[in-house]
Length: 609
Image (tube, rainbow, N blue to C red; front, top):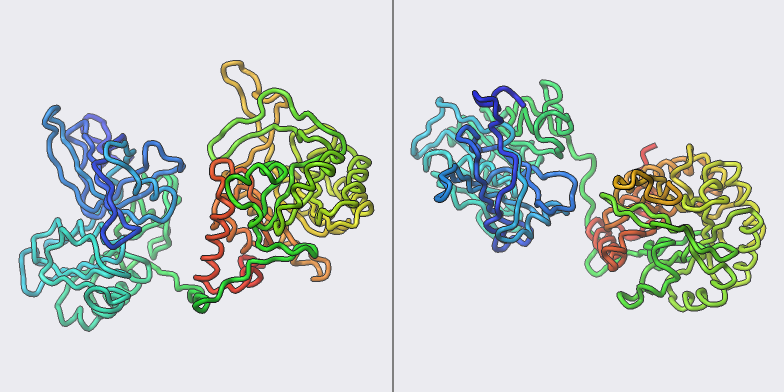
């Protein structure tokens, strides 16, 4: 904490604690914009009130997200609590609902607790050189775009009425102007629903700046708008001060995660900003224009072929999370997903692991099931026939084993069935006698793949372990040994400790960690394997199926853009049984809005080598 943030008694001047939500309500006509009001009580008179342009890090006290969200103050009023006499702040935030954190904030009810840290960052500074009294020709120009209206509307409210002109730019309609008392208020909308039809450039140009006699511009909004203001201010020969945003962790300037490149080097948005002198900012030009949507009425083709097997869509239920296909039938039509990888099964029946089997962790769970299953002969006689009724979903038999002989014998039995594909599990971390060991060594992996391939004519997809020292080497060895496709990754080895007993929670000590927390790791491994695959002659390449922490449609898009042909969804179904259908709907909508007629048009576009 800077010296400026400490009072004479050595106490921090920032607020860190909880506030009570007064309300969170949707702005009329704006389905994704909400006004959140919260009341906080300051412990000391030396604690700061927010100035225009500053922000708070905020999060629901019961939040499921890891980090606070930086939200600019839209309006603030200070008073005294009638009972305690302590200073009280009533803060308002305009929030754009666009992710889990903001969704939680928008859904908060009156009386719920909100965590806050702030006020943070610098504020808009208005020089005494500029006229600050009502005028027919104000020298101050303020511009806001979309949700960026919040800090500049707060700035406007801090200035004398009619001492500035205000330009407000929206996609449709308008909001956040209740406290704006401009000499001249100009609204622009992309759809022409209010004010001037068009973007900000339809109302504010360098020529109009010179004609109006503005001496300075203060602005906040999307980067293209700010880049435009920077350019026209320079053309008009005046200063501009722009409020920037970036992803943040600490918000206090310590982690250096929110820096932006400027003419003065890398500067922190949270501490050196968010308000910057426009002269030092550098805005990246878009690398490519946004893709046009598919023509009206055209639906994207979600079908995909993997090792000669056609899937109606790329969303597959991961093995170990969907039983043998029947468990979720009462919740949704499971035949509508692309495929189902059945419960991992071995030649002989297994009782699974003893002791605790599940531990919940932030971002996922650690599990030690131990491949409990009735054995391949039982599966073939009882479970597989019922699963095969779930067409057109593709049924995949997941085959595990403790020895090459057991793998081979089970594969021979499966070869006599109608199951269209085998997923060879050489990556389970929760069993003895083979399990993960097969998938961590390229030579061992190749030996079991080649043996199973010789024993069965079924297309063979090999499931890889993230615990391999070199997963790319294992992947390439499996391809060379005859794998028709690869799926990755299985769970990551983890440990949990019972602090009351002072011993490991799991009888086997180590277990498998899965869930959203592993998604970036799994995505990196898929990216690496596809990157290596692309170096092979085209005839030698095999499809890759991505697994690991996929919990929403955006995750699926990432894996496909990394090069995956399809994705498997696992533990996300435990807290949202409909997640696979939601992923399908989101993927379809994304492809339509971004002009992807087929998965092939999107697959691997993020590969840069």
